[in-house]
Image (cartoon, rainbow, N blue to C red; front, side, top):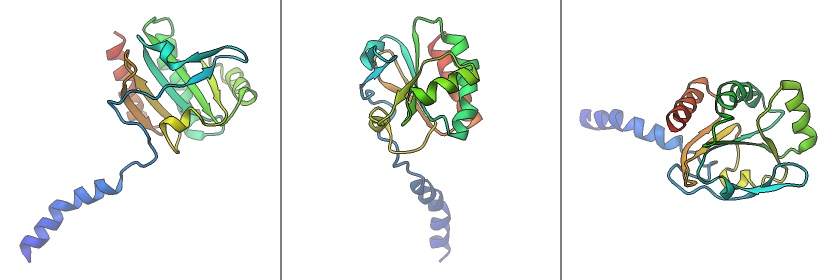
Length: 169
């Protein structure tokens, strides 16, 4: 009986981890990022493949999302302001399920200057996840996923900052 109890105590953490499996994420670190085409403005489009050779931060947010509203000022101040002139860096922030009519007022009100782009039909987001924002995904120069996070957590955001600092030094 003691052996069974000891085995149960030792195995409990494994069961707890198994319950925390993320089924909302459709991509994994180490994979090639799904490609997509998107609008840079009302008329001009781009393709994710156009950004090969750069470290790319893809951020998914929504204007109504409280954690996103906590994270976006940090994206502006600690990422965009630091790396916006670095030719090896690109930031693509996609508003999940909202258009220019929601994005542009938020940019103006908050003073955001980084690219905030619409994903009205979730066609881009749907290649990466089923639910939960904010999300950050970092791609290496070859388009491989090297980082992914869900939600806003100051400690996790610190890991993102450290990764970018390492890759863009």
